[in-house]
Length: 242
Length: 304
Image 1 (cartoon, each protein chain N blue to C red):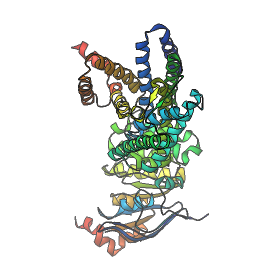
Image 2 (image 1 turned 135 degrees about the vertical axis):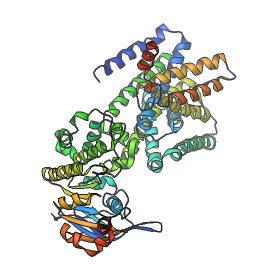
Image 3 (image 1 turned 90 degrees about the vertical axis):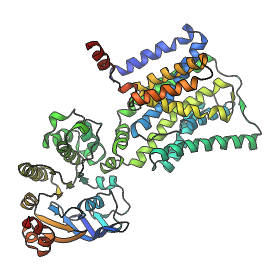
Image 4 (image 1 turned 60 degrees about the horizontal axis):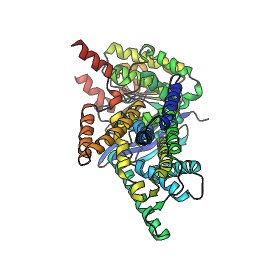
């Protein structure tokens, strides 16, 4: 079996006249923990849409576990072990917390893991006491945690996290980072994490990819990326100047 | 589920006594109620969960009725009910595969249009191949037999609704109704689920059409494919609360009785009254009768 869980080959995404992504090539090995950073509108979420089947890329090819994914629907991505969260949480608002997790567990690969996985993942994100709450009535931060539990309930191999720590204080972001590290070990996951909290992200992940105007401008260890002149100009520079 | 099955069986047993206890007019009205229970509950099974608003009930019911009209001299009537269910399910599967990628108004209008297409196709076939406008069904079963059959169908539909709601199919359909793409990211083959759910719910409408056909003795496409049947079905389900089971059941009885009472007492403007009532109920009970918290409403009144 191939060591590569995800491979992007010249992936591009064109919306009318707007090039949201251009010529992205990237390889993700099993077990890696990758952070993705970039200014607003750099194409981070668009990249997630391309590698989870939500919006198929208009150019290039995506491979999941060695399989070409052109023309595949999101459920095929799920069955190959890709799970994601959304920047604006997309849970099933009228269902209870438990039914949301049960949903994710039923149709993905989670069903094969037995029913215990539902309780296990709810425990992992600390939602056991809320299991009968209506999901849509919870504050966004809790909905994000629920989305993590739902993603885990599909028994994924590759977990895509889109700003799960948005709107949190620095201390809370650190907590989320620790949670992700723990989940990664417990569930043997490959993680790709988009976050605007650059400092925490750089301290947590092993590898950072930087997007700017739809292009991949840097990809390396946090130290390499932080020293990269293009990254400083495009992104970190703004922060230092501020 | 524990108290559900006994409750269904007991109400079934009580309703089965009707032909001995009630005058014929009331039995006939009860049968109309039960017919709409089948139509509205089966409609909710798919459309209430997925929020795909189908106007195909007329076509599905009519296909069932025409199965009986065409097959009555060849096959026994109970078998025709099964065949009618299969015909409507097959039609819904084909129709669903073709149009279930559309949502909202587009889906509603297309399902309605397909129904009209079926009606005119059958009219054409009857005229050109058989040289007839309608068909006479002779030697029909007794009124009691039809009543008990429709009652049995209503009970089966109600139980099926509950079984589907608790199943994987039902869970998948609810997810599709709330966020279809999100459901897909959790591994739901949304296309397959939609076609399956649509075809399954169609089977009940076809069955009740095949059962009711013998009531009319004379069947032509305009009776069998009466668009009011489809509209009334949707209205009952919406007024009752399409995501619940008791909503459509209550509303099927209430609206059938109401429209009959109004029709008898105000023959000239009963449709106006009915329409006004429907507008009011949609305005003040947007999620249906079943969603109104009667207990709290009454409690608050008493507190004052």
